[in-house]
Length: 91
Picture 1 (tube, rainbow, N blue to C red):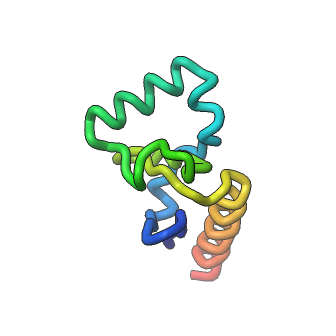
Picture 2 (picture 1 turned 90 degrees about the horizontal axis):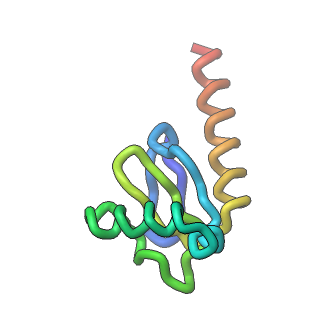
Picture 3 (picture 1 turned 90 degrees about the vertical axis):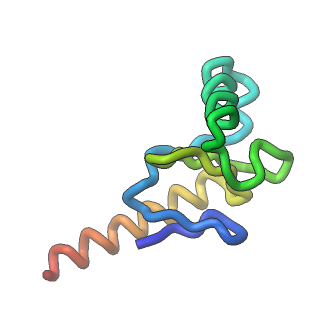
């Protein structure tokens, strides 16, 4: 299953590690360093940390800036994971 991150961005649900509110990046040195390293390593996608970015989605392969709010992404992920688990139980 895939989760829609806004625009043309989708990723497999199983690849999502964390969803971070983009406002928290500027207030934390460690978060800022994490994003800077992702950008330098060319692992930051989705337009980078711009004014439109509401969330950063950390995946197994990189970081994606999303215009969708963190609570909305968390809700989508939860529903998709529940659906996948239910589907697996039916098999």
